[in-house]
Image 1 (cartoon, rainbow, N blue to C red):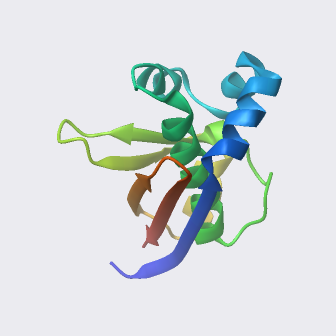
Image 2 (image 1 turned 45 degrees about the vertical axis):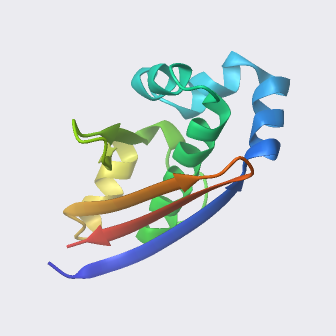
Length: 125
């Protein structure tokens, strides 16, 4: 496999928390799968977890070489292995666009502090 694309994204947690506070559950439902929201809800600070997952969605777009809103952000889902390692599952238009670009696998890394969340997505094909 070779690297098809690389996408980093950095999210300010306070800014993301403000968006969640202003728009409530509506924005969370629009951006995140049920499983992503459930996982975040079990964390001490759900905003940090959701910010990292939001970053992952944008990092995937960057790795694919597409602009914002070419597909729904919910079409990119961050899932976790039993080990805790995050990975990406694509749905709908995101999956179609990845296939068109020859992307067959992903590597994903997430991390966050109290102030920032970082996601790095590597598209492989």
